[in-house]
Image 1 (cartoon, rainbow, N blue to C red):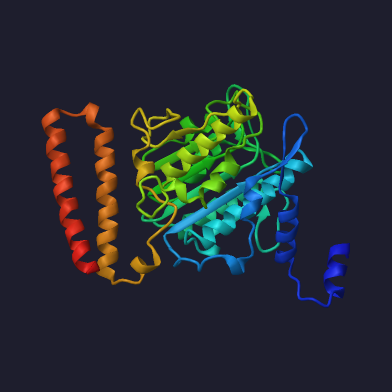
Image 2 (spheres, rainbow, N blue to C red; image 1 turned 90 degrees about the horizontal axis):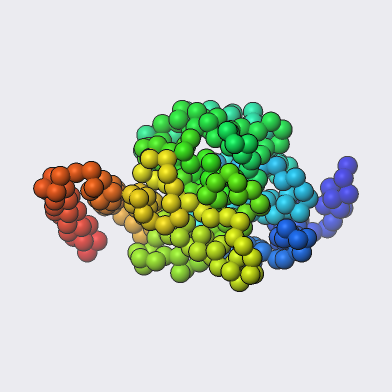
Length: 361
């Protein structure tokens, strides 16, 4: 029996393994710089007791998430990746309405009741299980935390044991019927995942712009900060979009290198129009789908309204998405055709908004 288990059993206080993990992670959340210096990560500041957190939002049964925290290579990275994985899992559940059984976490060293071991076989098993529970109307979020590699031909994400390539992940994801898949690959060399994974209905965000950017990335910590930062909601609509988190995290990452007087070794990319080419900003048709795809779901007040209200909200989201996709295709369309389609969508959206206003009064 380990010393920790003996201590837990002999203690007169009611401890749980989950509480011990949180205490250890709060104490050990550090980032090790490439030069060997250790600095505390901003993410550790979010490790506040559950009692101080706001009430959980209603669970959205249509949302699923897979978090893969891969092989670390060094003990310092192992602690950091574990911290990030636990914080991300908790945030998705407690702030963004993901059901606990809909957030699947895998890590280099499994944590009891939180994650299983991040091996190639376990990754395959996870995606196979989603084939049977996800529906066409589902949304799937996939998060990669760790290190990646690129040998000039194949991009891979480092796992415990044999790695899987970007092509392998494309095969696994393609078997899931969810209409919307959002991929955050926050590992080094992650830029090479864009082309193999791009497709209709997919949003891909990477921490680097190529496989040559192979240093450990900082993007993850700023992405996690974005999930609890009020300033992220740039359009002030009370929701957090995928695009808003990307903009915040990429900007903060760039500012870190500027403040440190260091050459940036990572440049985040976004691709969401299926052409396989990512961009650092909203350009080239990218960013429109991410703008209307949200991490959160309906608010508690919205979820408490009747089924007709929920139907109207869903219709509004669909119309907003269709408008953004139409704008992205503008250069490929005849002017008259574009104007006609845009007017039709705006008229329908206006009618939907009037109905929503009527129901909310």
